[in-house]
Length: 538
Image (cartoon, rainbow, N blue to C red; front, side, top):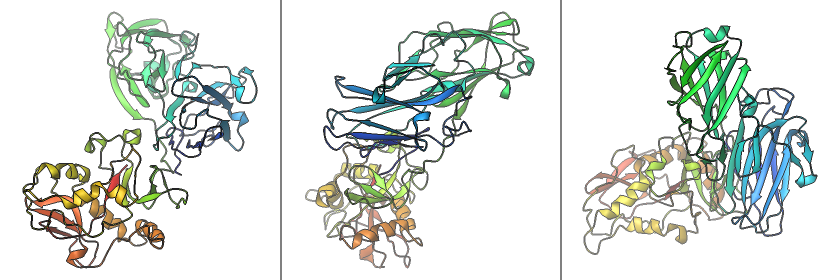
């Protein structure tokens, strides 16, 4: 089963729950059976060295804590398990819990920094560590802890960084675990900050917390944070920064839109109403402190610095991976699962131009495209596109260009072009029952379902399939001996062209051949049988 990056991205799927450097993936097979969760720290966090996956604690006064909070749908049962890095074995945490109902539990995950000598109560799975910057006693809601809003702890403190995420069991999907914050900095356009020795901030209205499950802020009213006589950051001309909860709100709740900032005894009002909050994003507000008036409100220029740098996910789908009926994938064949296809394009490769908007009413994991999958079996017998003897009556809404990748949309559009009485879209009808006819059922969400690829998608498959040492061809070949897959035909001849769902003109459908001896593109009126290999997007 595929795993994914824990910091900052976490992939979760039905199977053995694991959270490693990355990952959290899981499975409980039946009631009263334990579920084991393993959590491996990201590189070098335990050693306090720099890590680009999650900031290390700034000093030995802090340690990383991981919390797994498990509950059922009506909240009548819950369990909370905490571990800190000193309890890790080989930089790996292990958690075990037994759900009351293997089909009804959901997991909330939170990781933050607490004091290295934090107070501890209880033993085993009942062990609990004292919160520091965040109150986690009402998970899945998290709020700023009592006292930190006014003692300066929330200012210029990278130990306020944290990550969160949630999953429900029984769903074959992956979700990203990311910061619920925007990191907001206030910086100087000039050089006044370089000479500053002390700053104070007051009247800064922010949201007090965040619900991990609902992605909503806790409370609509503002919580005021402040600091007194702290040292400015100075690096990159920054006066101060904070980690601010975002949730479903993108604007600060500050009632008057102003904060007061004092630099070495001089106080000025700073207008922060233009700051736009986006989770897992750095935002910088800059001003010219030296030339700003002392009376009235000082405007700032807001710049979205972008996401925190994220490591490439080593467990993301790769070309040649097997794709299973539960929505998971793996590089090596998992004999305990039903394989239904092979990944031939990924979101960071040939499927990068695809978008969720191309699939109305389809729900994808993480609300993002992960890749394209080709089915294992060809339709047999080879279908005509329309009933023999019929004529295409229109192609409205159907893509026509050679780079068309809108296969799903094309298959939705063709039936709107009504054919003559007695004539039907044979290939489209066959693809609608493909999952049942070829034992290729799919999860109820997370995929587009099977459809006939557009010409651009089929050309992408052609390129990777006929390439030297093709990973897609090798994956299919491994299944051919068991008769669970068909190789794609690469011989020449008209009958070996494959239907696409793209049109060439008002009365013909585009075709693609995998033979390198012929022009790869052709077209036909649709009334003769041609090869057809469905695909899906996930």
